[in-house]
Image: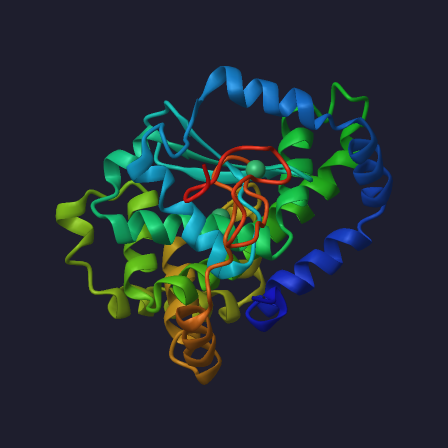
Length: 297
Ligand SMILES: [Zn+2]
Ligand SMILES: [Zn+2]
């Protein structure tokens, strides 16, 4: 699936703004040159549980069909022990999806977990992942890399603004894979930490109305807009009500209906369960990593 068919226009616009921030180019280039994928891979391997067809397969096995439908190579998939419900994807050539144990505790069924994984795959599809990696490195190490606050602050603010917009596109990818908006919306409430007994009964349309009141408040006066922008300036995720409102209105249109049809009928491209590269259906061995494939031997 081509991300241009569903990317949120505010995501695209925010990305262009970010690229235009003075110094962004130089900082991104510096990170691109010094970023070491092997180090990142090593750290993830050492600190987390790497999921596989033989390691917590009931979670791992949800990933390949989603990548197959979206036409993505398999990223590595990790579980990190952290009580906060969260999921993210970073990397460059090699991508890593991470979910927290806290998220698994909040998710109630397979469909919700699929929708969360599809959201992360949406970030890969929309080419968000490398910029997210730059953001993570800048937040954690920006000053120790020698970038002064004067250069870093506007980049980080533009980056966080873009990250909040990028969530809207990834939410769309999740809805396209699942085929409706209800599951991704409830999964989103779960990521916010809402317990199942409350979130399952929340009226999503009424909740989305709150976003409309919020927009009305922003439009009300420049001062309100300024205060609200100050309040969210450092947040990486947009308000849940705003995301749910965006998703409900987008999934009501024809573009969503045709994309969801296309994904439902798309063939799942066969891929090696070990290295995630595309393979031919008849292959007995993976020509990339040499592992024996099902039906081989
Ligand atoms: Zn996201
Ligand atoms: Zn392989």
